[in-house]
Each structure stands twice: as structure tokens, then as C-alpha cells.
Length: 74
Image (cartoon, rainbow, N blue to C red; front, side, top):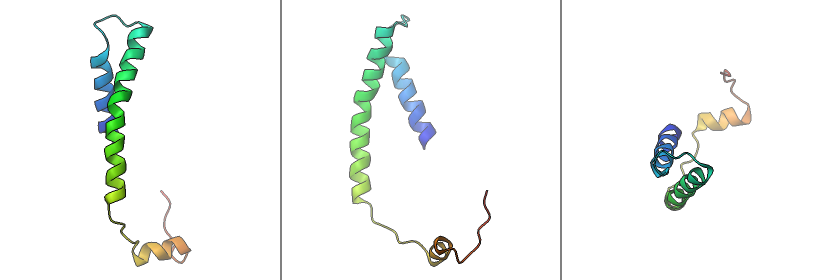
């Protein structure tokens, strides 16, 4: 999921660059555009995280967290 977001915002930044002039002002304007578009996405993510139902951990995960079960480390 992170790669999709990075690709999306990278494409938005590239599209916001004015023409072929890669000046500092152009890059700053492109970053500002991406930031402005990021704010609504983050607001939607916040609302969705507040609305989601909490799912309790399974008995096995409770035992793992308590240290009762050995789990191989990867």
C-alpha cells in the first residue's frame, strides 16, 4: 500500500513541475501541490481509522505477547 501512495504522490509531483524547467521554485511549487493534495487523503484516513471497529487479538497472539509461546524470528 505504501508503494502505491509513493507512486501516486510522485506522479503528482512530476505532473506539477512547470514545463521542463527544473528550477528550485518549480520544485517548491510541485511539493506544495503534493502537500495540498495530501491533506484531504490524511483527513479521510483519520475518519476511517476512527470509524473502524476494533478487533481483539486471538488467544494465540495473547500467548505470544505474554511469552508463553516461542515464535521464530525472521
